[in-house]
Image (cartoon, rainbow, N blue to C red; front, top):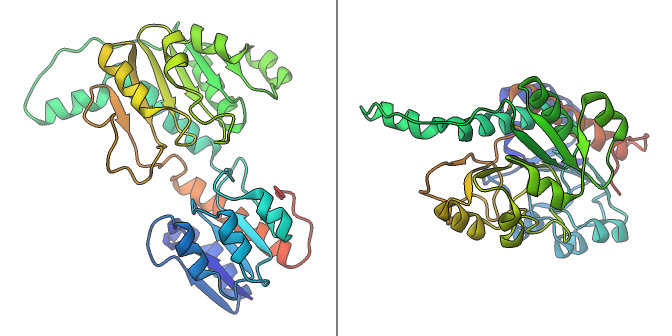
Length: 317
């Protein structure tokens, strides 16, 4: 067996057990030589003779899959999202795609809450000021009593709801597959998307990127929000129109925005750079010791189960 592994986290000590398992299983292991997510051309160049592919945030396009060798039987996503994999092309080729749902949910949830607190109390700006020898006075916003609108009440959204309730927040949510049992137990009100956007002081996005969700937060949606509302996106870049968000920050329509995912990654230019109360992290939501270990273990297990013809509960297609 020849295996390709592209997530850079696999080089970390937390993944020693997963790497040892792959090394013992495979005849040859090929690693990502670029230390970053790969573009389509780079993926294709590494697929020669590959049987199993553990994929990070690489661009696995239709062209990549159509040109993939006959040996490729499984693409095991290191993470829950599969928006960068052409699922239709994989299905047509008979290539199984798996993912690791829930393994990084707590990590992403906690970063989301950290961004929310950072925005509410302007923590990055105050930190920079004090380190520069200044002693500013800043008026922040309390979370208690505020309304949090969660868009996507899945594994991350549910964890966020529980934590927000503990902070005394009112939680409302939109999800096309709304979990009424969970919502009833935790006191989360289910509302249409437009109502969630209009009623929330803080809006947190936890949905995949697809044709329906691309720029789901644009000018029209921002205009409908409460003045001074905050947006947090730790899901996928492209959910928020960054240009429109920047305009709204400048006018004061938005109170702030926290981003861990961007339209173009890595970020070198963005209309949000340099603006006050914009907190930006480098797509690091899943990067905790615990999440890295859990994701790698599941990604490896998924791949080996498929290659060995065993049942796999995390098959996407």
